[in-house]
Amino acid sequence: MKLAILFSAALLAGGIASAEVLMHEPFDYSAGDLTGGNGGSGWSGAWTESGNSTVVTGAGLSFTDSFGNVLHTSGGAVNTADGGAVTTISAREVADRNAETWISVLIQQQNDINSFVGVSFYDQSLDQANARFAIEHATGKNLRLVRRVAPVVNAAAFTTTVGTTVFAVLHLVPGGGAGATPDRIDVYSNPRLDEIPASPQASVQISGLQFDRVRLAGAAGRAMLVDELRIGESFADVTPYTPPPDPDTDGDGLLDSQEVVLGLDPNVSNAAFIAALRANAGWVALHTTDEIDGVSLGRVMLSPNGPANFDYSFEILDRQGLTLETITRSLPLSGDKQFFRLNLDTP
Image (cartoon, rainbow, N blue to C red; front, side, top):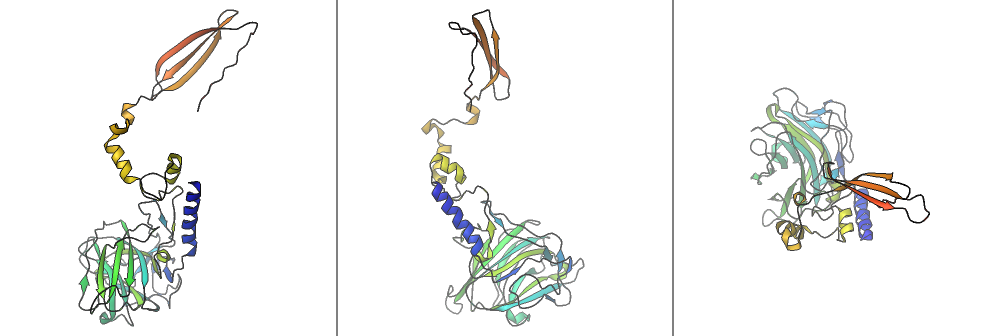
């Protein structure tokens, strides 16, 4: 079982080390306009603006999945609002891409709005006719995947909360569509970081997956924070993470170390069995914490009682440390021995 744990840990560590993201933007810039920012890796040029720039904030966003895996983050974040009521547009070019691709980004809505705000992907130029797809607001604070190629197709929205970070992952799938739209784009909201999700939050079909630039925009001063934009060839490329110190690999509510002690396999879920035990504790004579009185050993006292006897006593304490009972006994010293040794076998 310990070998299984070590092997699992080695796989996780290897996944972290081997991920090679094609493009990464952590927005590690000084606070102020994003225009001219040329950090990160894999990009074809610096950030540009169209009239008014989005702005870099001091604090970046973060994400931890439901299993305790922590996304690697650094730097600041970008706000689509610059403090005024004008529309902001910032864009950055990447190498032409028209293949299976994974894209991830952290998004945090700042308002319940009805004006456009989002992260969009274009091809050749920022002309509206060259818009390909986007993660943008749906109604109010919610987000959705949108195919911008005419006719526009809006995928089902996923619910978000103002001020709460969403980790959105896109998967561009060649040949995943049908007919005139032979390709497909899937979107995942807050997926587990250590495995490829089984099914997407939503999907749209599209003809061609090409893009060569990313645009961040907010209409009329609408605010949305954006951070940790990654583009890669695999899910692992765009989801680098640190696992928890003691993970729950199979997601059944028992830590791997607990499963080792119990003789279980940390890679096989026991969730159904655990749920059955909780629902039918009487089947195996299980008791709840409230049904069990926990007691402990309290103060131990020793004293001589004449030349050939001694008395000993000890206390039995309840959960709160209150004395339930004091037990006193007298024992004779045997033969010519005038001393005794007390051994307390405690955990």
